[in-house]
Length: 267
Image 1 (tube, one colour):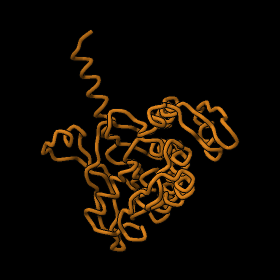
Image 2 (cartoon, helix red, strand yellow):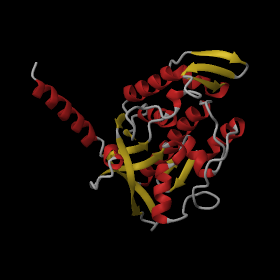
Image 3 (tube, helix red, strand yellow):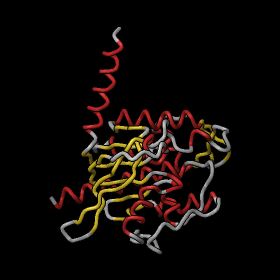
């Protein structure tokens, strides 16, 4: 067994996948529960989808459950999504179910990739591509990416770009893509103040209730989902209940599909 052949196999196959992902329908920043869920529902419809995750592993905060107890709570509204992903869930009391955090993350990742989504870990989004539409409207048309190790090491290394018809910010509490847009363009987000309003203290019921309303196009070409949506629109954090994350990811996919269909009609 030749080590050079092993290395060549890894390098050739990886860069083939990366090159194929430089021009996509939907690019998602963040492979947490909402990003993975969105990727599954998009890829299932034959939409070319890629996720860039800055960490070594996928799953966002889900693998840690609540305070490193790796169980999570899912409410009744999201149970059918768990069923679709074939995740085992045990009823705890009326309207609430317990699921294993690691099983859930594994299922989300596997189903998204089996549906056709490409996932790259250890790649960070450090900027966005902004162009003007035919109506002289600023619109996000892609992501600017770099190895996560570059930023962690504080190296000056120029990035590369990915073109995408739709971008989804699924970066969690930090709302990283929305934060980049605000930094580059000023308070132009579709929030009441135009800027990132910041997440409020924990209030699970209210945070879950407001999450789907916050899952929307926050700037032309940019959809926000999951905890990033609540952070951008100033809603509470929710803790270790994850049904809203799954429902938000599915809703983000639906919004992206609607936008892609409009683009097809206009063409």
